[in-house]
Image (cartoon, rainbow, N blue to C red; front, side, top):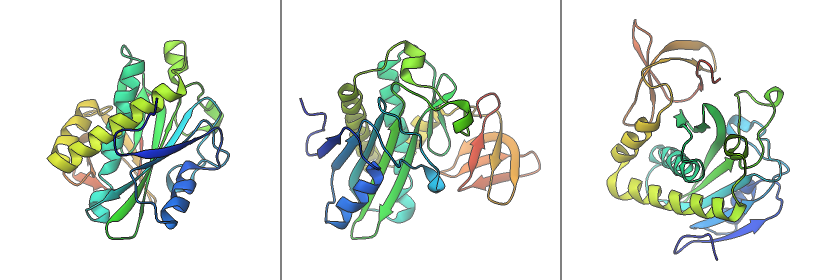
Length: 248
């Protein structure tokens, strides 16, 4: 049975260099999607800002190629829809676990990182997006190989879900949330994201390129920026790394 939602196509690999790199190649060849590239392992996986993404066999790596009718600024909001799709996937396989969202694009399982999202856009009319998702089904990187404490579904539930089942859940969930974003706007996505936001209203630390800020995680703004209340002022942060006490 195909894991793809109605109207989507895709390909599944046992191993690939990077699903996002393969997506970039398909887009250069004219693919506009919706089209999925999924793999059970990656040899050169990468995350935000060119960081290495640990990609052992047994986990899920997938990239959705999809058109985006809006601007590059609104394209960035699809990352929040993707985070909600991953959260719903984790809930399906670990219904008793605590699922949290860490700004801008990490998904936490029992307060440890279980997924990351890499969003890339490609010029055109309309824009074409590559939404890359890594989901720890069976394995998590050891502490000395990650900036944040990590876990997997297997570690939290005792067994990893089947790859095909997890991919099908993820693909259908992402389709649903992207449809919600398109038809209802970001306000609905923002409300759902905030309902799952990790440490909302609590102290956090944000690492920027030139400084570190500490304060209370006050809100997610209407354009997806993080609102940090330091007491003396409110900072609106468009890019940075969030560190949560006890989580990383």
